[in-house]
Length: 441
Image (cartoon, one colour):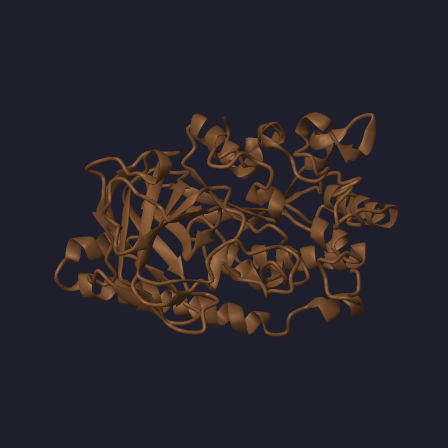
C-alpha cells in the first residue's frame, strides 16, 4: 500500500461503521418492540426477513460555508412540514420509511410523518395517505448519529410507483443530514403540520433530500437488491428534474420489464470520492452503511474515482491537498472488493467515462488535464483486465466519442463535458448486460 493511500485512509472509518450498524440494529429492535406484544402478526411480518430496500438516498453532512458549492437549503426548519417524493423500484403490499440523523449533533424530533401515493406538484392521491408510527407512537426522537425505521404500514405500492413522504418538524431543527443532488423537487411548508394535506402549498421548494434516507417494502419471496455505489453520474447529475431519468432509474425499468424481482438502490453522492471526504464521506468510510447494510442485497456496482482524479488542483479541495495516483485509487478498489466478498456480495466494476475539457470556461476548469487523463486510462485498464471484479460494465466504451475518445459524445453530454444527459443515461442503462446482475431476460 502506498504512503499516499495510507495518508488518505480515514482511521476512524471502522469505528464509525461499527457504531452505525449497532445503532441501526437497536433502532429496528426498538421500533418493533411495542408492536411485538400486542400485535404478534405484525411483529412476525416485520421480522420474517422479507423487508427489502426499494429506494435509497445516501446521507451527507452539510458542508462548511467556505466550500465552493452552495447548500441551497434552509439551515434549519421549525414548526414546518417537508414533503419529499421518491420513485420506488420494487413494489409491495407494505412499506416502511427510514429517516437519518447521521450528521446531527442533537436529537432529531419528528412530530409526525406520513406516506402516500404521490400526485403532481407536491399533492398526494386522495385516500392514499397513511400515518407512520415508531414503536406504535406517532412521534419519535432520533439520537444524534442514528437512523430510525418506521413501523410497517399496510399500503400497496406498485413497481416504479411514486410515493410522497411528509415530515413535520415541530422544534428548531438544523438540517444537518441531507442528500444534495436529489434531482427531485421537495416542498417545504409555512408554519404547521401539513403531513396529511392532499394538496401542498409550499413556502419554498428545494432540489435536495432532508433526513429521508430509505424506503422498504415487504417484497415477494426471492426478491433481492442491487446497490449502485457511485458519484454524481450515479446520482443523476444532468438528468431532468422530477423525471427519474438517472441511469439507475432506467436500469430499474429494464429489470421490471424483464420480470425480475430486483430492487435498485441508488447510493450515489455527487462529488463522492474513493479516498477523501468533502461532499460526503469517502467510499471506504460509507461502504458498510450504504452497501453492506442493505438486506437481500447481493450485488454492488462500483463507479467512482473520477473526482479523486479531477478534484486536485482546483478550488474544490483545500490548498496543498495531494493528488492520489492511479495506484492509490486502485488500492481503494481492492479494499472495497475484499469487503464485498467477505460479506458474500458480488461486486461489478464500471469504467470511468470520458471527461476531456470538463468545466471549460468555468471557475472549475482544470478538473481535466492530460496527466489526469492518463490516470483514468490506467484505472480503466485495470478494471477491464485485472479480473479483480466479478464483472465489468464498460461505460467508457458506451459514452465516448469514437472520433475523439477522450471526450463524451456530444449527443450524451449535459454540456459540462463530464455528466451525461437523459439520452446518455438511457444509453448507459441499456448497455448493462442483465446477466451480470443475475437476471436472464
